[in-house]
Length: 141
Image (cartoon, rainbow, N blue to C red; front, side, top):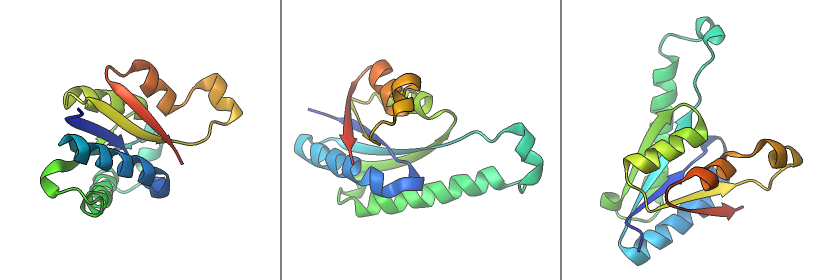
C-alpha cells in the first residue's frame, strides 16, 4: 500500500520520534515499502555567523547524519529499505519538499500535544497536514 514513507525526526527529542519511526517501520513491513528518515537543520541567522566556527554548518550536518544513521540501524528494517537525509531550512517546507522529491505516499510524524499558541500560530505538523500532497499520519507521544 505505501511504497515510500517519510519520517521527519527531531534529533533534539528522539524519544518523541520513536513512536513515528516504529509506526512507519510497521507500515513499511506490511506493505513492502521503504522508510526515509529526515532531519531538518535550521538556517543560522547571519548575525550569528561571526560567533561560530567556519565549519559549524558542516559539523552540524555530520552530527545529524550520524544520529540518523544510528536510528536507521536500530529501527529493525533491513538496510536496503531505510535511508536518511539531512536538509536545511524551514521545517515544514523541507518536509514537504522531501516528500515531493521522493514521491512519498505517506508522511508519518510525531507531534507534541498542542499548546494554546499552536492553535493560533499553527505547528509544523499542522502545516504538513494542510499542505502535503500525500497522506499524513500524526502520531501522538
